[in-house]
Image 1 (tube, rainbow over the protein chains, first blue to last red):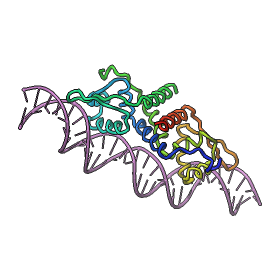
Image 2: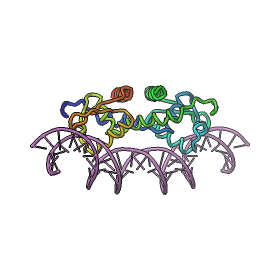
Image 3: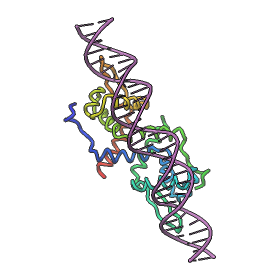
Image 4: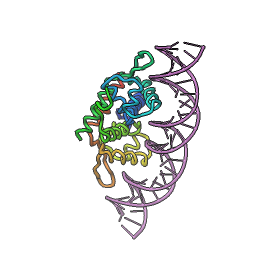
Length: 102
Length: 102
DNA sequence: AATACATATGATCATATGTTCATATGTTAT
DNA sequence: ATAACATATGAACATATGATCATATGTATT
């Protein structure tokens, strides 16, 4: 096929999909999203469960918020985070299933 | 949920899925895999179509080969690469479709 | 065997990424 | 208002990553 005849992806699309996959590709964020796909969590709870510093969790949540992959609600001093993109969770779970079944 | 009660992902699974998503997350590799999902290509053809150096393409193909995401056949001096993991292509196409339709 | 062509590979370098540390912000209770 | 708690944020640092350059390998042709 000639270059000119090719079905190209829009740069915008490539960039956006790249950001989503980068978000999923980091082990910390993957575990974090997987955890949030199971239950709504406070920042401290995430830190405890995943054995990470509060700061590390908060930085990662900031990145995931910017991509609108997570949302939160406040209850007193505590913020409860949850997933905000079912499609991305679906991609993650498909990849996990596939990997687990070789 | 208590930490001990949690459905954890195996480290092995996390690592493997991370490698797959990392492969998909780089714009160059994403375009490369998308191209190969449409047609079998020689290394030089990929380089021309994607406007990359032969070396850059070869390095990326090496990474994709190690992950068994691509395979190749030889015809004389030329190597023809193609996709070797339909499931990963499916993940990529889902992400692209979702991104294109907002 | 010598040359040309297609591809692969190692080293180097600049940039991106994730963590930590210190500190700031926001909320509640006293 | 102050103290205590929960979370966020900026700077600094170490590691990972992707491109390039130079060169090596493998194949076909003469």
